[in-house]
Amino acid sequence: MSHFILKRIFSALVGLLGVISLVFFLIHMIPGDPIDVMLGESALAADRESLRQGLGLHLPLYEQWWNYLTALVQADFGHSLFSGRPIVDLLLERIPITLHLSIVALAIAIIIALPLGLLAATRQHSIYDYGSMGFALFGMSIPNFWMGPLLILVGALWLGWFPVSGREGWNAVILPALTLGTAMAAILARMIRSSLLEILGEAFLRTARAKGLSSIHATIIHALPNALLPVLTLLGLQLGGLLGGAVITETVFAWPGLGLLMIEAIQQRDYPVVQAAVLCISMTYIVVNLLTDLLYAWLDPRINWQNPS
Image 1 (tube, helix red, strand yellow):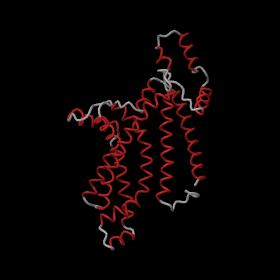
Image 2 (image 1 turned 45 degrees about the vertical axis):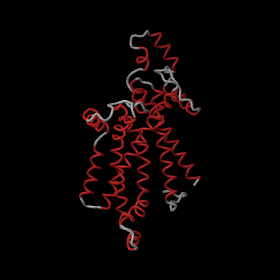
Image 3 (image 1 turned 120 degrees about the vertical axis):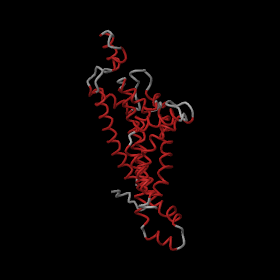
């Protein structure tokens, strides 16, 4: 078990290094100069050069990359080029806000997906099955940048139940969480249905029903726990994907989280902030996947840790 965990951690670190390096070089290739954003295009050449040297932007790109990795190993994220604030402070302000949105979106996705998947599997080829899978297809087909304005139009402008944007009030999280959670619920509902259909024909369920257990109890008590393993894997991947999807959703709803911070930093050519935000999202994927593997083995002791393939 320890060998498997160490192997996963090592491969995750290699992948993380690749993501950091790729983002570093790509963000520096974006047209535009952060010095122009900070000083304006009318600034004197001497002032521009002085600021460039003070920020270390005059160094060759490979040297900037090495300096960034060296500082990162020492847990030094640096300072924002635009505001001058420590990046750690910016992250500590924004990450809890994004986590709040992600947790609510995950709860909405589970609340929607679980009954839909159960209903579709237990009523296969019925109107309930077709309706549930039609919703799933509808939810997967609509991108966040279209679903968000649609929910704003209906929930905020027509009905007036929710604020248009921002984070004022307890109900401000509902519309962005629905935008994220609906697409996730559609994927989870299809996976729950597929997993349950594979389990419902097993012999142990027929035995449970023959002993007098009702179909509903047999499905919930015996079939559902056995069908949750592939769902758990998908749930772990989707949980990490919520942070990636939050970039668009937070921009649409002006939700002041990590995604909006990254978009603002890209517009300002604030390289260190963009790299730190991507690092946080990548670390979330890695940690969630590792925890998913550990939970997988806890739920199913048959998994061979020495040969996880």
